[in-house]
Image (cartoon, rainbow, N blue to C red; front, side, top):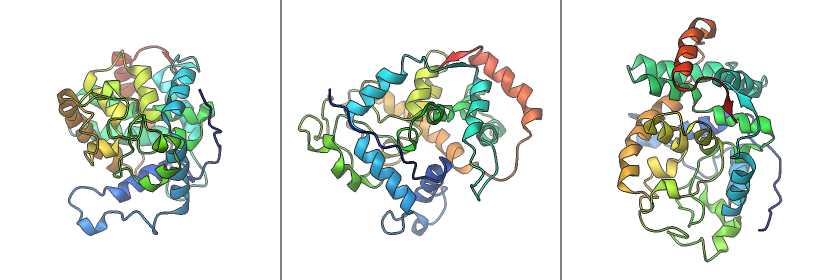
Length: 287
């Protein structure tokens, strides 16, 4: 098995820059269509470089290497709250747009879901959905932690953001992988499809035996915009996937549009969320 050289530069100013860019691509429902992001000359240089690296190096071989490296889940043992505090180390003091901690960002998402009366498991999903970003603290570069996710082992859709950068991906020229189905069968189901490596898949693997299936779809596919926003991979999805993507689409606005400078009171809210964590994800988890 060949091993690609993995560059380590981090072209984004911070991980939240990727999510801010997604919001520009997919504005809140109701905004006029002319506000949708036109990806091209106006794309920020750091975002372009991020996707150049992501699209070049996210191959089926790379994903399999990362699964072998991380999915024994031997990096650490932490409770959910400890993982949230660990993630706080990713706060970038130089970011001019926000001085909120990662815990505050997670609570903003969870509190918006709670305010709309959704089930307790969904509130918890909002709280934990980005915890897979601890991969950065385990030494992974940004392009292997965040970014739009997509299937590997088959042709890359032209509806993936900045798809032209896949021209440098060796799988693009591999006859096994460059057809619409690639190594898969029609409607095989996403559970049988390898996705690009990042925080979505990693957290899914950490909690997959403890959370409801609806929550697991939200966690595993919330960055799969080519799937749940562009319907670019319907040929791989089965009927069950299509049904479960209702939950992914329900979750997506809470993920994208709830960030604000209004700080949640972490200490006041902590007892509620620790009780919620103990209901579904008690004790230390393997990371």
